[in-house]
Amino acid sequence: MDKRILEIAERIHKLNVWEKAAKNQFAIELKGEAAPYFVIADPVYEHPMLRAHILFLEGWQGFQTYSLWRQDKSYGFITTPMELLGIEVLWLKKGGLMVMRNRPGCQPIINDPVYVKKTEKLLWQVYGLFLRLEENENLSMKYVNDGSMLAMREVTAKRFEEVALKVLPIIPHKESVSYPVAMAKKAKDLGVKDGETWVVSFGPNIDCVTRDELHRFAYQLTIDRKEDKVNLLTASCSVNPPTITLRDLYESYPPRVLRAIIELGYMPGEIEVHNKRDFRLLRSLTLELPFKLHLITPPTGKNPATE
Image (cartoon, rainbow, N blue to C red; front, side, top):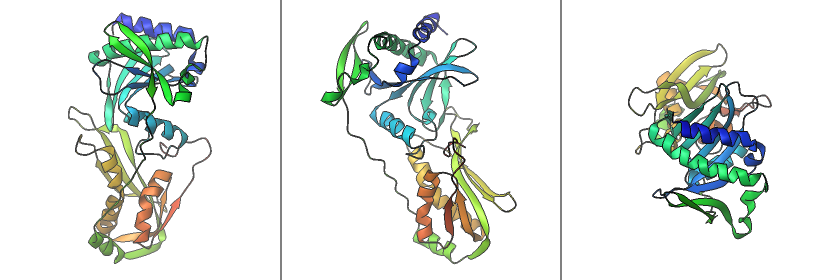
């Protein structure tokens, strides 16, 4: 990796304003790019491999999704910021830096020269903003009364200027779940095993990726019988941008469960899920089918979206 990005990254880390930075959010606009990058800084104290990291989220929708997801891990269709379009910079405890190009539903691209060069430009602006945090720890609130946030806009190749970036209204999260009436009727006509419970989940398996150039994650539907812990079904699907998105995968989740019921030839008396997103998406099936749906809350301190 180019020593220039390593030098600016080390300068940023030595400022030691991570806690102040974590309370602020800025934007950086690069010339020729349609969407701003939103800067999310985070100190990492207990991670075995990382000292700190910064997210550069690309576009308003990603920034808004991340902000709401931080408050409610079942929000939207992500289980990790890695599923949002942007760049992630990791300061490694062993020294050095990692630059990841994050893409929804796909394995990040690591230390790609194009994104490393772009990240260097972004980090220089972060360095300037972090220097100002030493004197004003609420720097990002400068334009809040005008409904704007502080942004650095690239004017020329060597010059940025501070601007007030108007905050856009939140784009409402919507989900649309549908399935053929005939399929629901066929499942309803099957027998019900009242004493049986299925544990159902859907989400990314980051250890399983496609072998094509996109390296797409496998999003797995898993159905286990709770009583004897036997796996009844595991099926995978992946994004195929731009035609199949994360939204498409998650909205296909209930029909996939319905199809699994038909393939297995019966439905259980109860289905158990372990996060609110699964519960929310599968709830529509209970309007058509006689099984009971239960949300099992994990122990305090664990993240049900990623466990």
